Length: 488
Image 1 (spheres, helix red, strand yellow):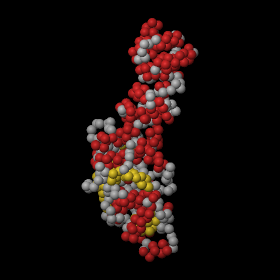
Image 2 (image 1 turned 135 degrees about the horizontal axis):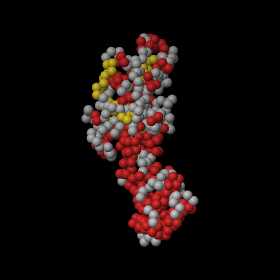
Image 3 (image 1 turned 120 degrees about the vertical axis):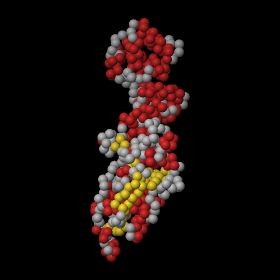
């Protein structure tokens, strides 16, 4: 470890949405930078012109921001730095660390075609050494082919003897025989760099001191170490974090459900909950603590405490975290998320950001112990925010079948109208006194009234619900429900 302040980066490729594995890698980089007083960079690796989808860049940025991952520098775009990569490849060529390869693109695109971006969590298969006949061409033959105008790539000249080693902060000392490393391509005949070249050139130019990335990149590291040395640079410190697997212990994919961060945001997960869940996939704070706010994550995080064992993505555990945060977040931090959910459902009212803010806070606080996702506020809890709701058919069939209910509910409306104050105790007294006078159990009226005023059998306690909805709305809804009850 040097005395310089660490500089780390997250470098997604806009070939897909921000993947769960990539988000976890970004989070680990951020926590490491914050824990050590370092700098966190964002770099967009967009040189793969065939697979890139430029419209996804903003989505990646938005998902990172939603998750609370904010970078100190960037975003830098590799597509704006192509001259740097070409210049580096030429320097290696002149120094004899690389050679021109005149093979057809199909012959040199093999291993490189499987390169994955930083945002994936796919484990690459071992790459056997690829023998290139161009390695053994004489200087005269190379110059002759170049004069003929033959297109060529630039391929790295891997030493045939010895080995390449590096120290990994997670996996420890690693060593690979050079005979197992193919002469990998640096620059394609199109003039575009491969991942191996661009990532090393950028990490050198940006002063990256630590490379924290998925364990699927372990096979890339020996090649990059060779490149750093050939370019006269000291390799950074590496830390490869474990992969994220599905419940069946295979790599996380769409068959396990959503794999993009944006999909979970759309489902109604809180970013605080998702971040807390994510940080514990492959890292432990050292005890049984599960609920960690951002400051605590930063304080406790270190690379040596990252596990070597692959993590398992457990959706049920993620939902548990979401429930915890829905219940525990300060209400003012929760309200903006609820506002978005209600806006998306088309039932938001602007007065809830003004004169009725206190009412909104009280209502959300009543509802949140029974919510799992933010969307619940606009689905099963819809009747708390709008009069436009339906009666659940199963609840109607179960709780409106007593033929005495229409008459009793009319009397309940009269009793509630006469209540001296609209509060929990007076609402409860009016209902229970009526039940006693009618010779029925209070539960009959409680359940029937709940369905009448919120459309569902399951909701917060009735009398608390009545207080939140207010006298006028409760009485109106009971009256409106009477014809449907009479015909049930």
